[in-house]
Length: 69
Image (tube, rainbow, N blue to C red; front, side):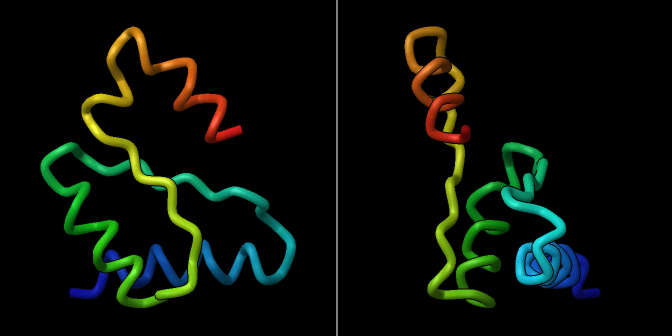
């Protein structure tokens, strides 16, 4: 139904207008790769930080949060 594309376009429009600097999309783990592929298909030049299962390990969590900031 185009829900992913609507969210992607909405967040990129907020960035363009200067309302949001770093929009965050919360996606279930099983949808992560599909969502990021759809995002990059819509905006191929976008800089997308995608979390992986390894990013949430105790040893890697601080580094991932630092990259988000």
